[in-house]
Image (cartoon, rainbow, N blue to C red; front, side, top):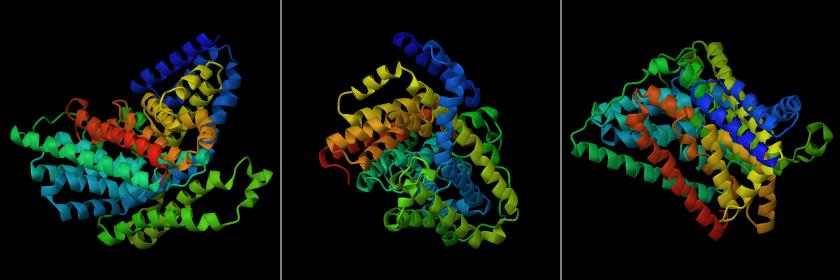
Length: 489
């Protein structure tokens, strides 16, 4: 029966990957794939759908929906107030075409580390990159890689305190904060950034030697104004990040951009409030009431990290509204668009988690568990491999990370206690691991970014692999070695 169960898991997973890549909705595919796995294992189908699958999906929604909701709202208000454009323009004008690649990378890093949703950043940074790259005569095929380096690598997984949902997911499992292993996170971020800039600079220099300028090797893809409403882009994108691209064009953007310092302020509020809540306020509060039965099976360590991010995003939203009230001509429409933008992504990722919950409940999963935990190199290596593989298969860093931790999180915590490993180190390894192979060709962020840049996989994907996957893997290996030698810092 174990053999049939394992075949069912692999068959369900293969069906999920194949049909999702062809544009089918994961809302349908995930329960079907889960039921196929349960069928081959000889397990009750309806019980696994309504109790196991929905229980796992509901658990994810209960923990992380507030972050998806507030993050999408903040990103939409930043966009419609003109704040994202103002930040991007300020950095672009300050560095100029001579440093076009660096300007795009830093602009992306600034807005995403400040809490702006990935896809909002894409739609703002693509026009900025086109202008700078055209003026500098840099091949347009490098635009997606430059944007990906700034938005989808070190600010998503490595920089301590990032409000990205991927950085929030390990907190309930490991009892950590958004600032887990800050020293190792900074080292990993530096490796990703420097390697990516080195690679893009090398590619630019090579193109100049060959006489290839901005228009050389330009692929043909969706125009940026069409990408948000493309059904295939939308379907894949909603499993990769916390914002539904279809809502980008709704609401009304401000005709006048705010001054740069006003645009930067809400981003700084996110980081500052997150830090103060995580390190100063919540540790000093009496949260013993959480032991009461009415709050369910939780603890201060399980919720404090989530609460820090929630309060930080609320403070940033209020700051943004106070500074930009007159720049939001249709505030209700902008708010509606931001809130609506969170729904499909969070339900899509929750459905992936539901599939993983069913698989983890099957007897055959013990074979998978034994294989993962038996990987040579210790728990840090096996944790990195498991999050890498699951993020690659699902095309979602958040989905793959949650599936891995739902299935094995308690086991890794037990191993950490036995071996004296700081949970903060496990947190950082898990997040960076999930942010590597999630950037395979079927990933929604990859598909969307290529679309808004007017490029194709053939022209631009190799450079994206180098900056988003190879650089992240090098950083992951470095922090595993440093964490093993020196512990968490």
